Image (cartoon, rainbow, N blue to C red; front, side, top):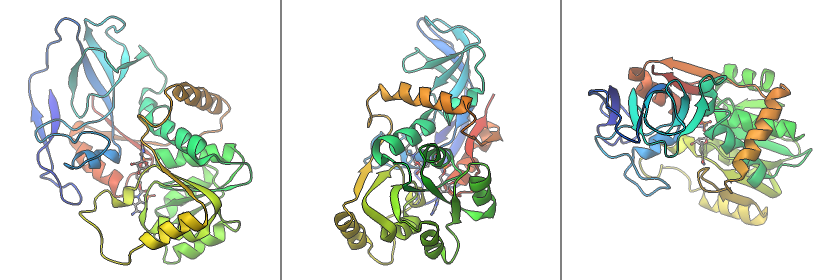
Length: 336
Ligand code: NDP
């Protein structure tokens, strides 16, 4: 059994010393336990935060403990009612080949689910994040302008496509011409701006002639500063993530944007609301999300792009790719 553990807490970007591969015997399930073999491991930006020993919404990973993460796995042997060998499950068992489980918090996907890895993306946590953050906090109305960064990633791509379904003008922000072309041509956004362009702010303003009514915050930084002057009165800003800042090691040098942010929130009467998908919305909304997403997929209204990385040993480098925007689409590692 291979597992990847946190060897030391990184400063800035994780490096070769941050994570360590260890091997041990495959565990034996006892009474009331099942053995699950990991098939797909999800890689997500929040994993960077779990490496820090800092106050957050979840406990940090301990030194020597396997990295946290959602997986889709296959039940190998089972002493748990409701789970049989061959069943595929959604499990929070982290970066390892095998894990024992008592079935608590494990979702059974059945023996032969269609696109099992999608439960880590569009049909799972990132998809629900997009749906709930946009619809329940952003409350987009037909004809309004919605801006979302990390627009080719699993959350941003879904936010923009749902906003299109709701009749909005949708402007994405992404890195480089290939991602921007995908966002417009395949995902159907009205425009997509490269955040590395020198005239990013001007391009964003030109793409939003009627201002911005909903800014779905995924990245912070330069994109946020470009958005602020364009926010309309009573704009809504669901604060989902600040991926551009996850590797910060203290406050950056440079101008203090605090006054600009708070006076915009005040003068434009902006609703700025953070959320953490696990506990910010009523549990009953999960089935509403699943129903909507199934309907939209059946109608061919949603495109989904996934990048599969082969081998658990390649997960650390692939996570850095996610954090630095070198990945393209939802990244899953094929472990088994
Ligand atoms: P992505 O796969 O989209 O990865 C993050 C992306 O952020 C990168 O690919 C990159 O896209 C972009 N990015 C990184 N640095 C910068 C920067 N300095 N400026 C602009 N863009 C940058 O991630 P997800 O779709 O999984 O997640 C999107 C956001 O949602 C993240 O912030 C994540 O933490 C958050 N999240 C929050 C949840 C919650 O409960 N609140 C739940 C799930 C996700 P590009 O290459 O286009 O620059």
